[in-house]
Length: 343
Figure 1 (tube, rainbow, N blue to C red):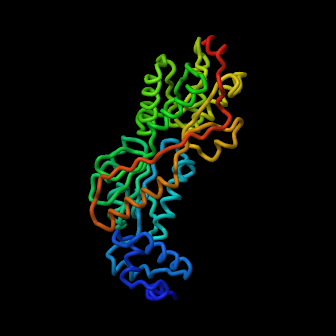
Figure 2 (cartoon, rainbow, N blue to C red):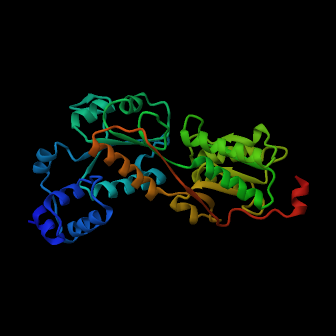
Figure 3 (cartoon, rainbow, N blue to C red):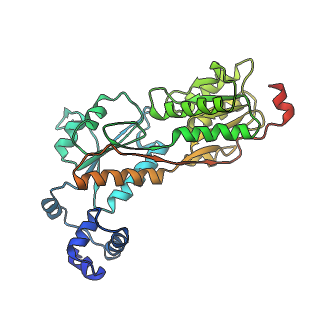
């Protein structure tokens, strides 16, 4: 069996340095850490979990809370990708993930009680709703936490730049000649929904566009059905928009279905742009222009923030904003001058 001493011998570093690198201590350089982790991978080193727990006074377990409103759980394309990236970044350091269950010995327990009982070293929270009291209780506790897709002043947070992404979406539609732009919004109780709506309103105001109240339609919790129903409302207007910015790709896909069912085409009759760049976005007809979230970087930044707290035993309220990118495909088109004059 490969030991930590074997890793030290191969790399030329001391046992102490190897141990610190494996535990992601801040006083080990990235170059040193990379060399040690490569040796760990090459030699197939697996630390003894019992001995490691006794030595480090840590459980080497990270709790995961995942809350979304569509009822599809870990099949959710965005959150699934983020958690997978997070897992890879903490797994290489020797941590296991424990997904929350509110049942312990057949008794209903809160998230905080659950994780105290399990003795986790920290918790990653993936939640878009402001209203979960048990999540708030956990974030207010002494357990190190990092929150993804939710604003918090009590915890470390990692979010995509939802505001800037919305601005980019409207700016792109404007560059194509669209002046009549609607928004299918995410639910107002979600952080992403609020930020993307604010980005839409700010950008349209900056560009001097008139946005009637009926051009902003609730898409519920970012579902295809929500997008479908919202688009039907826009199609029923006396003066429907020429372009639609949907706050999520699922909303955009639902909107495209509604447009086709009504006998119209995308982008010939309506231009559509989404947000997220889920895997399906590139395969629908037409392939969806969208704002891409960097799920790999979100997962990495979240892991780094949480491990930093675990190692220093200090809870921090640091915020990381991850940039987004415009991905141009085929669901938007240039609006010629003659068509603009009719709107």
